[in-house]
Image (cartoon, rainbow, N blue to C red; front, side, top):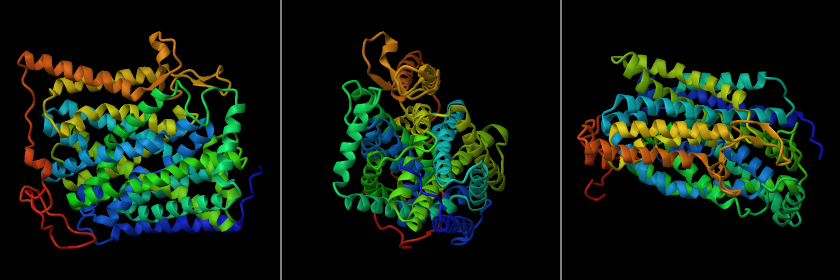
Length: 551
C-alpha cells in the first residue's frame, strides 16, 4: 500500500499541536508561582505538591510512553502473540507498584529523599551500595530515553521529513523545556499527551470497528501472514516453546517498571499518600487502552501496511496516515510525538536528580547548596539525553521495545536493595552489593551472548546484544525455550544476597545502621514526622482528616 504524500493540512495540524505543547512546557515555569526554582525539590519534584489530576496524568505519562504507541504494536506486527506480553505486564505491575510506592512515598517524605539511592543509603548505611544503585539507575534509564527518541524519529520519517535536524530540533526544545521548568513541564504536557493518546486510540478502534469484518479480518489476515513467514518465532498464538519466555518477560517487566527512577519521581511529586493510592488504583484504565494499541499491529497487517525502509517501528504512524483524514492524521502523529517527549522529560529529570543527590553531593561536593544541586541536576539531565542518543547508535535493535527490555535487565538488579528494602532491613549491605554486582555481570554477559537472527531463522544479523531472551540451549538443554535475561540475572543477584547475608551475619560482621523507623513507612501529610508540609498545587486545600490509626 503506497504511503500518502504529506499534505499541508496534515503538517499544519502536527506542527500546531506540537507547538502548543512546547509553549505549555515553557509556561510551566510560572505555573502556580513556585517559590524557588533554584531548589531541587521545586525543580525536580514540583515542590512535592501535585494533586489528584496532575498526578494521574503524570503517572500515566511516566508509564505509558512511545513504548506503548510505537514499540508494542510494532512487536505484535513483527512476531505476533509474544508482543502482547505488555498487557499482563501492566496488569501484574499495578498491585506490586501499589504496595511499594506508597511505602516509598512516606519514607521519602519523612527523610526528604529525592531518589531511591538516598533511601538505600539510609536503610542499609552503605555509600558504596547507594552509589552503585545510582549508577545502575542512570545506565538503565538511557536505553528507555532512547526508545522515546526512536518513537519521535519514526514520526518524522513517516511524514517524509528526512535528515537529523528534526530530531535535533525536538531534542533541543525538550532540553530547553526541562532545563527551565523542571518537572512542572512534563506534568502539564502530560495532560495534553494523555488526552491526545486516548482520543487517537479510541478513534482508531472506531474506524476499524466500522470497517466490514473489522477485527475479525485483522486476526485472519495476521494469521495468514504468519503462516507464510519463514521463521517459526512468530504466530497468532504462542508456540509451545514461547510460554516460559512470555511469562518471565511479563513478570520481569512488571518488577522492573517500579525500579526505574522516573516512576518514583512521579510518585514523590504527589502531595500526600492518598493521592498516590487513588491514582494507582485507577491506573488499570490505561491497561485497557494498551490492549487496543497492541491490536493495531494486527490491523496494520490487515491493511497491508509495509514498514518504511524496512523499519518495523514505522507501522503505526503509517497506519494512522492510511486510515485517518489528513487533519486527524496530523493530530495522531503529534500524539505519538508528545507521547515520546513527555516521558523522556521525566526520565531525564529523574536521572539528573539521581546523579545530583547520590553521586555529586555524596562524593564530589557534600556541602552543596540547594542552588548548586538544582543547577547540577539541570545539566545532568542534558547529559542523559546525549547518552540516550549514544544507545540508539550503539545498540541499533531490531525492535524498539528491546531498548526498554535491555534497560529492564539492568534496573532489575536494584530490586533487592530498593524494593525489598522497603519491607525489610534483613539483608546485609555487603551481600546486597555483591548480589547487585553479580546480577549485573550475569545480565550483561547473557545479553552479550544473544545474537540478532534474521527473518530466515539462520542468518546472524548481529552477533551480540540482539535481544533480551536467553535460549536455554546455552545450558545444554535440547529445547527451543528461552527466558528473559533480567529474571535469570535477578535470581543470581538474590542467591548471592541471601547467601552472603547468612554468611556475614553468621560471622558477626556488623551491618550498616538503619536510619529509618517502622512508622516512617506509613507517614502521611500532616504527620509531625514529615520534614515539611507540601504546598497544595491543585484540588482540595483542606488538610487530610484521616489518622495513622485509621490506616
